[in-house]
Length: 343
Image 1 (spheres, rainbow, N blue to C red):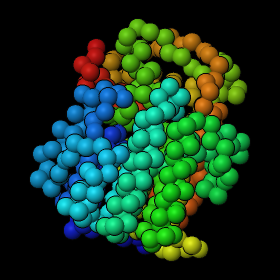
Image 2: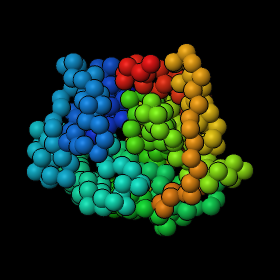
Image 3: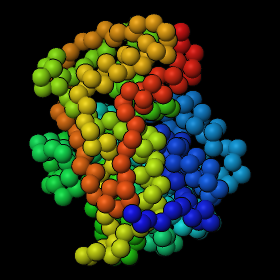
């Protein structure tokens, strides 16, 4: 399978380099001698100390430049592109979270729409070789057909977060068509691992355990029709992204634009995942761990199953995730116990 490897003479702009996926990708590029410019506003949507820890891992690299700024500030973005002239842009900066978008809609419009618009405008005026941007599995909304395929109808989002991500795909296609910007959107499916996002279920469950609190499981206790999630380990995600960076889309139909699912293609029942997390924490602590579970109805904006077909990404760059949930959760549990000094 032929695909171009990373060219470390290129300058990479990563927005959101202190986010979960952005920090891993930045470090992988820096380890290969690439020049990385990162912009992030270190907002307090979740623990800023964790973001600072991720940033501290990147700061020692001489080829890393960090700008504390917001992508929704047009002048900041224009000045950044004018000064650094990035060859490849990876837009990971976004306000994440489905439930949070119901309570705080303003910040989603600011970051996910205005911020992304500013990135597209900058790519128009300072042409780049490839723009990769984060979309989300949430664009599939209440899609009943599984696995989700990129050709599926995605006009029924069930959260504002999903709407902004679908909008990003439309905006990117338009700019790609009008200004010939090679662009790739990635629909991420439940990414997990060490230094992950504290608002994600596996992280929250672990927090609750150590706080002596029960975990809430939104499946009505219905194990036959349990929630399915396509959990994907962070290292696998980064390998897929890394392979895409130097492989921009050709102009097909009306624009050099494409969208890929990036997930595990192997959904797990939520209860299986929780069992694996209990076992991983038991191993990390040297004692038996069992969560106190409370079952509740599914929440607005949540969907029963997310399950990615990753055939297109495999055909493009040979992407195939290799990390089992047992191995991935063990790495998370070991990190968590060490980082938070738990006993």
